[in-house]
Structures are given as C-alpha cells and as structure tokens.
Length: 380
Image (cartoon, rainbow, N blue to C red; front, side, top):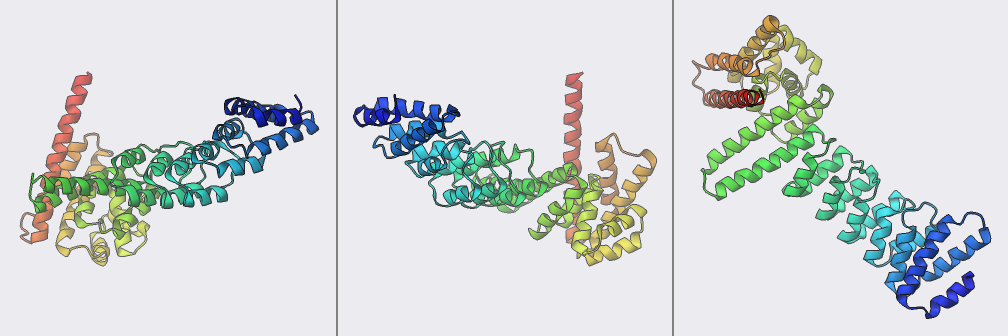
C-alpha cells in the first residue's frame, strides 16, 4: 500500500484499526533505511496522524516511536504536549528531549507527567535539581528510587527539606548508596523530631524527657554516621551540624568517648576557625595547654575541658599500649570512666548533665556489647 492509499484508508477506517496501523507505520519508519523517498512519505503520514481525533491513534504513535533516537523530532515534541497519558509515554522514554525542555516541563506539568520525567532511564543532575525544587511528592519519590538519576547533594538536601517528614521518601533516601553524611544526618534529625512529637502526643513521657531522649538518640546516630564517613567528607557533615546548632559539647564528647577522634578534631577546628591539621597535631601530640587555648576559642564551656582532656589522655594511652582496640565496649568504657572520674568533684550544672549523659552512653554501649555477644554465640 502506498502512502497515499494509506491516508485514504485512514479517513474511513475505525479508530481501533487506525491505531494498529499507526503503530505499524511508526515501527516501519524506524526500520526503513534504504528508500529515502519511502521514508519521507512515511514521515509525512505520521505527521498527519498527529491530528487524528482518536487518542488511541496518537498513543500508538507514541508507543511505537518514543524510545528511538531515530524518531522525527517534531513528532516527539508534539506528542509530548498531547494528553497526559500520551505525553507520559514520550516523556518517560524519548532520548530526543533535551534537559532544558524537560526542566520546563517539570516546572509546569501535572504530577503524572513529572513522574514520567523522573522515571526516565537516565535523568541528569540538572533535571533532578528542577524536580527536587518543583516536583510533587510522588514525582520526588520516583526520582529518588530511580537508579538512573544523577543527583547533586544540594538536590538531595532540597528533597529532605521539603519531604523529610514523609516516611516513604525517607526510606528511599536511606536506601541510596550516594547519600552524603550531612544529608543522612538531616534525615535522622527529622526522624528524631517526629518521634519526639509522637512521644509527647501519646503522653508516654513529659516534654523535657522526650527532648532529652530524642536529642541523645540523634547524637548517637550522628556519631555512628560520622564513624562511617570518609575523612575527606567530614568537614561537610561538621559544617552542617555547626550551622544547624547540633555541634554541641555533648555530641563532641560522645564522639571522643566512642573513639571518633577525627570527628572531634574536625568539629573543634570548625568551631575555633583554625586549620584542622593544627588541631590534630595538638590532640595527637598531647599538647594540653595549647589545646585548651583552641578549645576556648571554639566557645565550648570551660568546665567541660577536663572531661575532653581525660578522654583524650585515655585514648592516647590505649592506642600506645594496644594499638587499634578489638573490644570496642571495653575501650569506650575505659574512656567514659576516666571522664566521669574527672567530673567527680565538679558541681557545675552543665558538667553534671554531661556526666549523666556519659553514664547513659556507657549503659548504651553495654547493651550493644551484650547484643553483639549474643549474636556471635547464636552464630557459633
């Protein structure tokens, strides 16, 4: 059948048959490489079918052509502006759509079309950034669960700020392998705040106790995140904590007692505004007097310094005698005991609060050690 005959047939054929023919024509166009005249005729017929009154016909064209880089560009652009169910097919598949077009679509499209863009096999960081800023909830969920998406840390932060209270999005973000430490900590804090509000709403504990529980749970998770973070990435996490007011005395003391000296050094350097290498030299060299000066410049409470000094002294002693400790519970217990002993004669309110926090920290470590022992015994 010639193209002219095809167009004459299309005028009187029922919609279902026209849709079948449109799909076949689209596929034939993609495989017709030899006859340029025939290919031009097919393209003209496809273009005419864009005006077909039946959406089934236009959907068939989209289905046949969307995934191919050889499809006529004007046809793809037209179908991308068609009814949502037709446009979605093209937006989700076509490699002919460029980033600027996709960004414009994300800004103005309905949620189903945003989802189609977020589900593309490859989504650039530029398109992901526009989705993070303007995308609806389900579109952002599709974005963070798509392994073909390239996302900058700032885009992930934007999604956390907009949807951090959404359980499904939090879970999807936690499952990503490229989640930066500061973004993961943002999620932890969101979760802590939500749990704290739930505890108060259920009247399980009073508000002050709920704040203490959630703050310490968040600190515990933050120290764990810091322990898994590469040294080069620690400054970003520390700066996030500093800006959000979470780089507290209690958090830093907890980190030291857990043996995370890198995090303590990065935190003290950020608060004091001095090079991290200098702080590391003072900490690891046991230069207590010089360290006290930097500590004071950081604005940390004077009465807490002796606790940090005791923890660092104990850490250095164990490192010199044993190297890398194999028994993490015994290691942290020795440091905590040394700090609490140093606080023994201090009656200052904040020092007492830190000592109480450390006792709870020691209890947490004991429970973790017991669970590890039980797990090893069960596996034996």
